[in-house]
Length: 580
Ligand code: PEP
Ligand code: MG
Image (cartoon, rainbow, N blue to C red; front, top):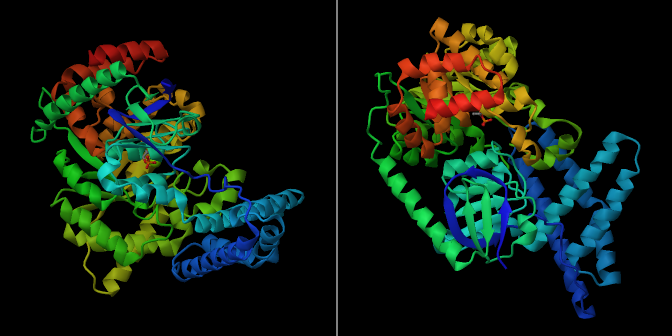
């Protein structure tokens, strides 16, 4: 039966392929009744899984020398639960008495324990139920042989280009692992338009539709799908006529892409000769070839947290140094802006460790980005040293995420000085004059931008978070995605104020949020005075095409007038005229 689902189109293009259902619901286990002779074997299988997870935790602890204290605490709690007879012995009894398979026995016991924890008045004790669930999830995964990843690993590489991943939810950590694959598209039930999952889809230049609500439940493995990433539409089991229509559209998109490729070596300047720098945002060193292929003049944002997000442990100084060096060398003398870890919120450092926290606090307002780096000085020093060491191979700029306070900048600069002085002591070469910039992504930072301009060498506006924090819209939540509005007058005022203030004192400022890669906003940003845009490589040539057709002497005065408008429909009309 053919049917259509509607969601948020977060990465354009059309994909036609077969559904590959990705399971994360490890706790939805099979309910099997065993024949009596298999009961002992099942108990042995259960014991083996418990031992394997214990070993995994011991190894994790040994390998986390630089990890934050919370990680060690959560490993200890998980180990303790694994050793507790309630988890280590009771399920064995259930397997024997009820002749259940090990997964089911474990999940039954987990449900019983969770109920008990929920009775506690003490919040701390009540929240330990999350630890129970997480530790059980680990054991179930072990019993099932890591099903989520396994589904992906088993997908034959040769077939991947025709597979469309269908998931309930994908964390940024799941999504980053797609970079090793060549899937045609992905679709999910949840997720917002500027969530990091969406950003990764755009960086891979594959169509993606999020927030479909019931896709995972309604679509079956192997069903034919059409994903229209621009319109946010998924067609399940299309008929021949619809299929042919979309095949035609796919060809048209390919033709357009080929036309754009011809712009690669064109100088990026407006009709009236204003130079506009177009930089690339990357997540991994492996993204550098694509950045160069699309004519990037440098890297405007290297989101370093993705280096280890899908592996659960932190790369040491050497591994980070190698990664940064690879990017700098790969860019052949072009500037590379390396942002220090922006961990927290939807980019969890240790999801298992903080799942409980996530329930009781608002992680996007919590210890995220520079706040976490300053709270974990060893982790921060490791990263700063690695970045500094890589700076001897080419021009690196250091970018600090989520600054709000002057004292955070001062502390960051002191930490940098400490890293420099330790390297000097070890006679290691680095760029003594490395430039340091700050992300403007909190409204307070945009309003009090003078503090930043006096302390830093450059600024980069992170519109994704700036919009999230200005409008109080969780960027990862599809339920409020319709309220996420880059054209909200308050957002435009903050942008305009930041750009004008930086221009007055001659400090370079870029935009590296998703607004920079939206060609429908290119003229608006040019008119506000923006001259440095950083975006996914796949967007660079589209934006360049707009730049080449724009005249700053015309758009400047027009945009200044436009910024006086605060009625949304008038702003939209004005934008349409600007782009017309
Ligand atoms: C932003 O917030 O706009 C930004 C570029 O950073 P990130 O999307 O990684 O939060
Ligand atoms: Mg941000």
